Amino acid sequence: MDPLTTAALLVFATLVGIYGSVIGAGGGFVLIPSLVLLFDLDGVEAVGTGAVALAGIGVGGARTYDRKGLVDRSGAFWFAAGSIPSALFFATVVADRIDSGVFVDLLGFLLLALAVFVMAMPTAFDEHGEPSPRSLRALPVGGVVVGFLGGTFSVGGGLVTLPFLARLRRLEPHRAAATTAATTMLSSLASSTGHAIVGNVRWSYAVVLVIGAGLGSTFGASRAGRLRPRMVLVLVACGLVGAGVPLLVC
Image (tube, rainbow, N blue to C red; front, side, top):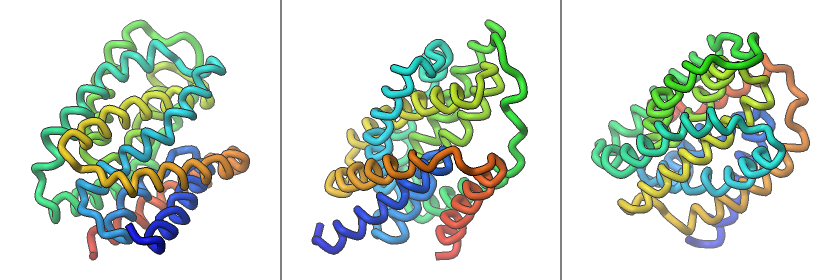
């Protein structure tokens, strides 16, 4: 990779890290399409490289949340029981078998669908307290769905997981976000492992992405939480549409 590409990738990753921290939803849904559109990676290679970067970035944040006692470990464990094998399976067996052009179109449609989901998202934090023991039975099922998204596209996992965990486990917003960070990190580790096994990772790009996004996340975290929830949803939806439409028209 030439110095100009390295510099551009570093600046881009830093901006994605800032954006992802400010909105509190990560930046994978911007990262993956941009690797296709701006840095000329194939769809599945962008997903594999992005998965490695997201996993590397997420480890530190998940450990910090867990040390502070914010992670619902029981909920995270049962969710991961579904998401980890699902992400590994779809990354290793499925993603590589989808035609490149079809893959990019599917990714574009997924991002637009997620934008609609975000704007129509019901309030997930209305009920707090002790969850029903039966909630644990539904968590692996939700994990399988998120594993599919993470293993195949490396986008959407956190956006779907956050309201799902908050409502099912009756978590307060900060605990729901912390538990989502932990489960998303585990899913990304499984996804990145699968993509690495089948050779879908461009490692030189992944290293730069981890460095840049790590710097951006640190800066953006100091400014997180200052926006109203509705404004955050609007920014997330704009990012999804802005990343999804070019994939469908280019």
